[in-house]
Image (tube, rainbow, N blue to C red; front, side):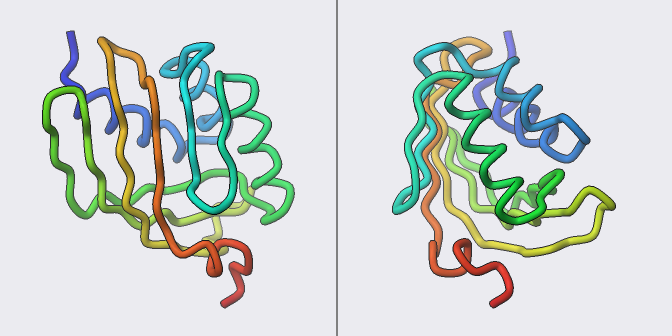
Length: 128
């Protein structure tokens, strides 16, 4: 059985590949997993999370995200991540980079909840 940190790092690494975000959500989320982007959106389950990701993709022209892990800490089934999320277009060009603090709650090899905290002003206008 993977550790909670291994689950989170594998999940995040999948976002770097084309189709990876949807594949990661399908593999690691359950029908009741919560994904919360504070100040922006909350989803429940795989389908809502994939729809939110698609909306982000359309709004920003995002194809993938390279998630640069700065620090990771695990306590029980919780994993804290300090990261920089680099949004990339479909040609691999970085279109925006955002510092993020996140917390994941893991059970076995599934992510039960994922909450991200970041400056939403920068996310709403990636040109800044």
